[in-house]
Length: 181
View 1 (cartoon, one colour):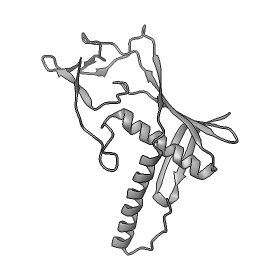
View 2 (view 1 turned 60 degrees about the vertical axis):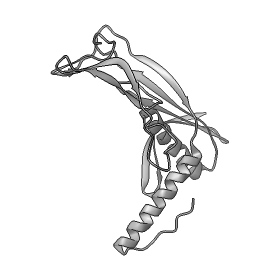
View 3 (view 1 turned 180 degrees about the vertical axis):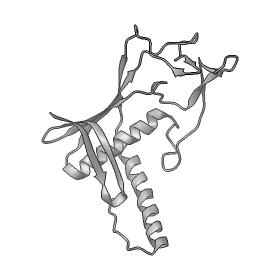
C-alpha cells in the first residue's frame, strides 16, 4: 500500500467534502483509517452515562443508561451514537474514493486515542470549575475498531441529499444538475 494522510475528498454534485485521515491505496483496492479522541470514548449503542448531581459541577458516573434512540431516516435502523455517525463518515469517504478512483474499498477502521484524564470516583474524566485535566503520569490508550462499510446506507443518504438539492434549486429558480447515483 501507498499511505496518504489528510486527503481531501469530495462529491461536487452533492456539495459534500471531507478530509480522510489515512488513505492506504494499492492498484486494485484501498483502506481508510481514521483517528478519534473523544473524551467519553466510542459507543456503538445509544445511551448516556448518568450524572452524579450531588457535586458541583456534576460528575459522570460509570452507570450506562441504554436507550433505543435511532438516527434519522434513511438511517433509522442504526443506533444514535458516535460509533454509527463515525461509521457513516468513513463509509461516505470510502464511497467518495470508490467513485473517484474506480477501485473497491476493502476496509475501514477507527482508532480511538484516549487521553489520560484525571479520573473521578467513578473512573470517568474528572471535571472541576476549570474543566477537565490531564494526569501527567497517565498514559494515552489506543484502541482499534474495525467497521463495516455501509455502502447501501451512503447511497440512500446521497439520494436524500440529491432530492434536497434539487428541491432547493427549484425553489430558488436556479438551474438543475443531473445527479446519478
